[in-house]
Amino acid sequence: MIKGARSALAVGPRRASRLPATGPSGGLASFSFALGDLVGTSLSNTTGSRRAGGLTLAELVVVMAIIGVLALIGVPRYANSIARYRADVSASRVRADVVQARSLARSTSQGVVMQFDAVAETYEIEGTTGLDRSATYVVELAATPYNSEIVLADFGGGSTLSFNGYGESVSTGRVVIRAGSEYRTIFVASVDEAVEPGNRSTPQTTQDLGGGVTAALK
Image (cartoon, rainbow, N blue to C red; front, side, top):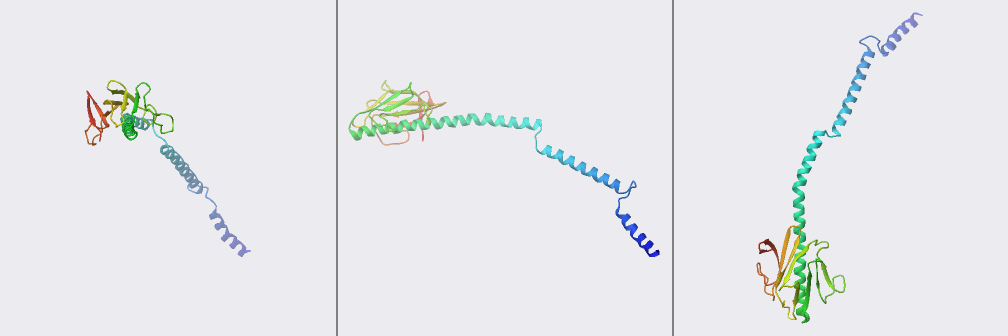
């Protein structure tokens, strides 16, 4: 019996040491502090995630103001670049077709006529098959990618450009193309000569500077 009591006393304190203390400074107090730390950490993480995932009203206003300023600067420049592109493409197409009509007249030894229509914004080369195998070669400058208009087509007082069988134009003149705020002028002389910068003896694409002043595009 003495041995059993000793063994019970030896085992009792060990088991008692594993149980949480019930005093003010024991395990329950530590548990409450740990729970408080856990709740505080969770709330701080939640607040931080909300702060990182959104913008305040002041920040949103600043961002919108920056976007507005960039739009005011970029949109006009973009529109001007598009207008320049369309004017250049349109003028290049007219110039190429004038050269083609002159070459066709010379190669066939027959007259070739180009008719410009400033109302319909079109021109055609009579007696020539279109690129789409249509009966007549017609170019619509109001269509994509040109999106331009014929401001003036003047060849001796008319809108018809004629070449004789030698490739000579019956009368000299010019065609003025506009796309947005951009103007391009194509001059047509009576005969071909060497192509040189500023030489108007051949059809050239030029920029209309206003007041009757033109400058050859490089």
